[in-house]
Length: 184
Image 1 (cartoon, helix red, strand yellow):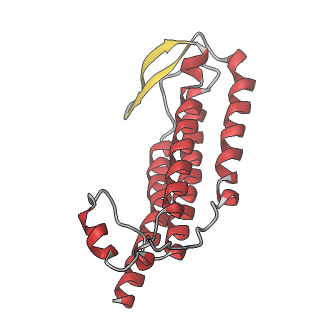
Image 2: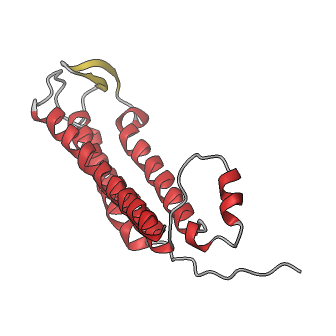
């Protein structure tokens, strides 16, 4: 008879997903409001010199950024849910270290349930900050006049937003690593 291992799985941090949902809804409303006023062609690609390719205005072309962010939000939420459901390293049954070592190393197993929850929250914070980044893309895409120029500040703001978005995930991973080393 197998011994049953009981563990308390942290609940999914839904409240940490709310900012992303609000950003997504705001993007959709903003796009719906400006869509009738958009020119006949909308930007398809933005290079370092500004808009360098155009496409005829369509619902898909105008809302592509919203669709991409919606997909990213679903994937990040699913990853966060998987992280909190992962059996942490410190809760593996005896001999579990050998079992865990035999698994492919696609990523590190969180050390503790608290660490898993921190990582899931950090992933959801990253998603919300990337949503703010996507807002800058919307600002360029949804201009009501056809112009190839892009404000110079957008590239710098976008770069800062990417770094700031990834920082919580790195911080949570480093804290997990310190927790693992302290327990060893």
